[in-house]
Length: 264
Image (cartoon, rainbow, N blue to C red; front, side):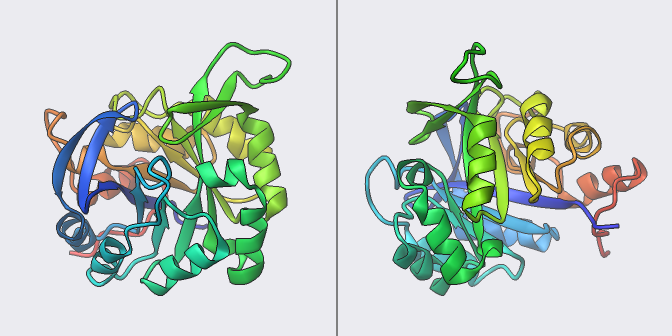
């Protein structure tokens, strides 16, 4: 049986890890390299780094911070934000990432998914989707709309249709980011996460809303995802307490979820 993956997510701005609520009101945590080192030492399975203002500011990814994080961690490392071309993907991979995440630019230029898959392999390309619950319409039958540019721009695209199209274009993995649940610590949006996981044949990552190990367990046992993003529960001062990776893995193991064991 394949083990489920725990992925630490860093929303990075000017070299610092920040934490938001519903993509707004970011508070600064610490330098990205410092936070990455701490979480790596706790035996996290993977790390995702989003340069959260790169797309809106129409600039390239902060490669200096990518290099700094990559020099400190030795687990699969994904980078997103500011990636517009296959050349940008190459630069991020050369800076130490193992995968690239495309989001806003993939909506604007879907061919970037195919270009990346052909150049580096589908396993290198993660399609990240910002999704928001809306009224169901003929155009958005799932009731979830795709947003871009840090949830600042809504596209009129249906989340399920986009997930299926992303897979067809060559994405090797999909990350479902719930705008409504982001930073709220009330659990993932299980409905859209489960629906995307059922709609595609590639690994799906749950993202947005985890505040306790029970929330992570729900994602794994109720949606069929292969990985879950944890961020606030690891380091956010907005929570009454933070959890270590060890605590989360031990909770999941006790609940019967297959994860890589914590090595003491």
